[in-house]
Image 1: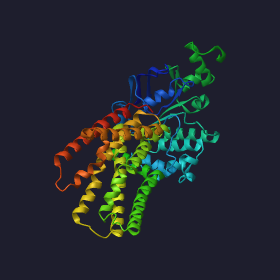
Image 2 (image 1 turned 135 degrees about the horizontal axis):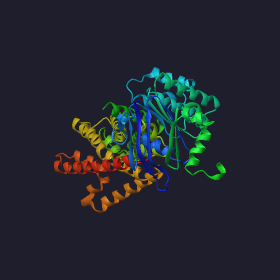
Image 3 (image 1 turned 30 degrees about the horizontal axis):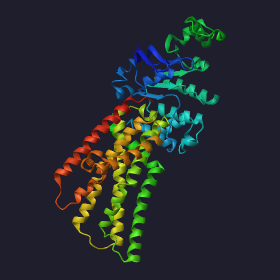
Image 4 (image 1 turned 90 degrees about the vertical axis):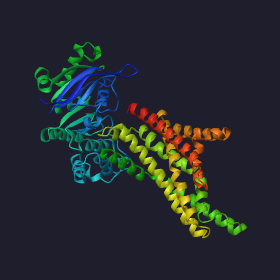
Amino acid sequence: MDKVIEIKNLTKLYKNGRGVSDVSIDIFKGDIFGFLGPNGAGKTTAMKVMTGLIKPDRGDVKIFGHSVTKEYEKAMTHVGCIIEIAESYPYLSAFDNLKQFARYYPHVDHKRIDEVLELTGIIKYKNEKPARFSLGMKQRLGLAGAILSRPKVVILDEPLNGLDVEGMIDIRKLIKHLAEQEQATFFISSHLIHDVELTCTRIGVIYEGKMLNVESTQNILRNYANLENYFVSEVERNGRVPSCAR
Amino acid sequence: MAVFQAALVNELEKLYKKKKVLVAVLLSLAIIVVGQLALVLVRSGFGLRGAGSVEFPMLVLTIVVNTVLPLFTALVTIDIFSGEFSHNMMRITLTRPVSRFKLFTAKITAIALFILTNLLLLLIFSLLAGFLFNVNSATLGAFVNTVLSYMVTLLPMVVLALGIVLLANILKSGVSVFFAAILAFIGLKVLGMAFSQYSSLFIIPLLDWYNLWLADSLPLMKILRQLLIMLGYAIMLFTAGFYLFDKKEF
């Protein structure tokens, strides 16, 4: 199988002791990888390193064989992402915001911008400024920006934040559609365990900055009633879950 | 190069779409109107000549180079850096296939183009006002000197902007950068006056270096010395600013 993302011995520790320590994961072509963990487990830190927003203390991330720390432009050529909140320029319209992204990709034209606005369900707000958007609409605009260049890898940190039920279903369908039709590989972090179960094909559990296990969703559901049980069991096995959560 | 161009066009589009920049340009132009009105009033009220057609743009430059031009340069620079840092907007661009060096250079280039546009607009409108209201004493030599004075002012203004970029990468909030920049501006100006023999080293007094270009016989060695000092400062400030920008976590 083609290795798309290679995270090797990744360590990034903040002064407060939080962060990630010695994380290694391989993501293969076509994976919809769910990065599961409670708040503060290190999901966002790992994803920030993957997208070059912060530099690791040790280790490296390679995307299509290119190191994020050494060959950033090459590594990010086929990557679309949202990290934490999907930010946008409040003084530019939704269309102009996407036009800003489009300039980095010669093959992306105005037709494609309209297409992603349609796909994410915000085409009617095309000429409106995000300053007046709800959190869900901003998130949809961020998703439109992430998939604009038809990326081969999409990194999404809590993509369902702020979305209503309809929005969650739409985005879930969109992720599956892109994975099947365009063979895009997804790396998604979420604490919404049910959504991860419904969307992802492989699951990695991170707890207190350390990777506990990586397993396919199919295998997990063969042995556990649901993903939640697996998650609790994994954390428990490592002796770190408080008794009240058992 | 295509990536740098994309980054630069993006920065220019953001500048253009922000109302602050438009206000800065309009206020710069308002100075010309107010200045010209004052001259007309002085002439009609007191019978004094005021300023001739090509003297008026020089009068405008003398005023703006130590007031509104550094002020607007500071505001735009702070907006481009601190403004985007504080609202996590840097992430929008930083997660695209563009290196931090290209992005940093594109931002600096956009600021330099803003200063150049501001100078050109001031030059054109002050020349127009000068010719409209004071049709006398215009010579080709004086006209060339005026254009040259405006153009050479770009260099010290860019050095000033690079200094503010460095501050924006050190201090967290835009407000603190603004006040630190004002204090540094006043401090360096005072030091330049107190130690006049070393004034070139305090960089801010070099905002007036266009005066050197107006002399009948150009003081070439002095111009070269000040040019090299400014280039030296530009290289040091750019490098220090980029070093901090590259290390920044978003």
